[in-house]
Length: 91
Image 1 (cartoon, rainbow, N blue to C red):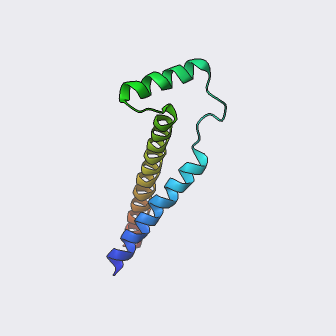
Image 2: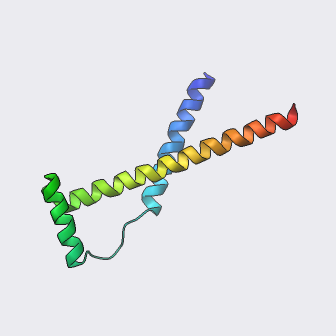
């Protein structure tokens, strides 16, 4: 049962970090310039995506997943380091 609780906690932690990254990691709030629009249009056409905003969305979701994964790894490593240090001091 403890293993299940740990796994559920880890999934909840990752989902929470992903939601936080959605709220805090944002693209530029300004409209695209003409050169940015051209670049996104060429990239989306090259990849076979009809709408450049779909590509933009996919790129930002990928960035948010990477940010959430890096934060998750950092938290887990820090937790293990602190737990090991705490156990070392008790023993």
